[in-house]
Amino acid sequence: MSSLTSTLSKATEMLWKVAEIGFVANLVIILVYILLGETSGNFVISVVANTILLVDALTYQGVVTIVLAAFLYRYFTQKL
Image (cartoon, rainbow, N blue to C red; front, side, top):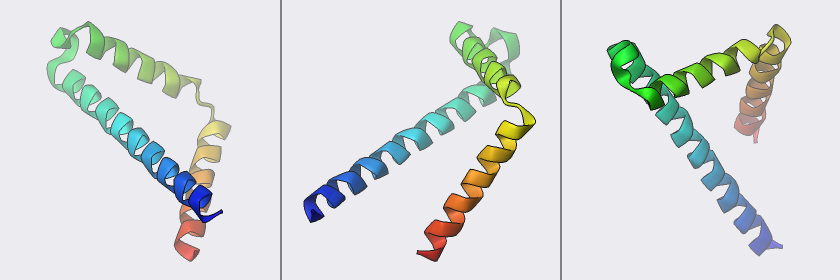
């Protein structure tokens, strides 16, 4: 059982790292777009367009749910 818990813990940690890297990469691409504008290239423009579509698709309830889930996750992980 300890082996399974250890493996799941390592997998979860790796997935969090991948998510963090993806989030930071997205922020860097948005920063490049802010600095260079329309001349930043097709890839950067498509990433920014997809990010804008994702943000537009989120409703007020969706944003509240995400914030609440993040708060509860942080609260319970600090308690344990």
